[in-house]
Amino acid sequence: GAVVSQHPSWVICKSGTSVKIECRSLDFQATTMFWYRQFPKQSLMLMATSNEGSKATYEQGVEKDKFLINHASLTLSTLTVTSAHPEDSSFYICSAPGTSNTGELFFGEGSRLTVL
Amino acid sequence: DAKTTQPPSMDCAEGRAANLPCNHSTISGNEYVYWYRQIHSQGPQYIIHGLKNNETNEMASLIITEDRKSSTLILPHATLRDTAVYYCIVRVAINAGNMLTFGGGTRLMVKP
Image (tube, rainbow over all chains, first blue to last red):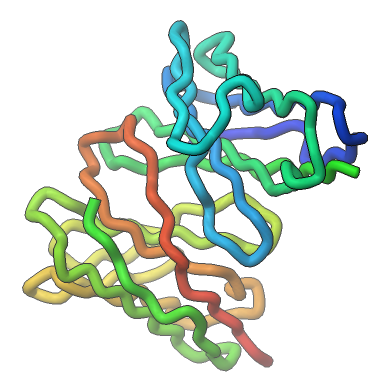
């Protein structure tokens, strides 16, 4: 099946710095990608929908100026956590729909962010 | 998308069948039942999906009741590597550009 890859898989940063997470569709094109966040022992929560060639759409309560999303090409979306704080520490996961009509979403491996 | 209800946790003995139930009593006629699982510290993995007929693939079987208000995911011979959180999600398949909405899922613990 289709493969979605994230980088880095884990990152530790100091409070106040910015961190960029990349999400790539390796063998297919994705005009849409979804970014999720998952806190320990909780389910995945959708943060935003990344759209190639246009602005991302954010879920209620997610600050667009803090979580910058850029869908630079049909195979790459990036999430930048700006001015990170310890409460931003979480597991960030991206996903992309496949090219068939089965409705299946392919997920990346996830990126664990720890803000000190 | 229709709401789903799953037990928060289940145990299963290694080598035995794991039967994970899901209730989706408000499912609409054009909504599919999807199952994903998430092994600790990894992204979710697609398992199977179906509309109204039972489905089987190399990973699992999906049994959907005739009224489609509930379904059961069956792992025929559970292994320790099947320990994960299993999510049952209902959504319209043709809207492939739409995201998945995750509920609490069932935490399956496969024990030796």
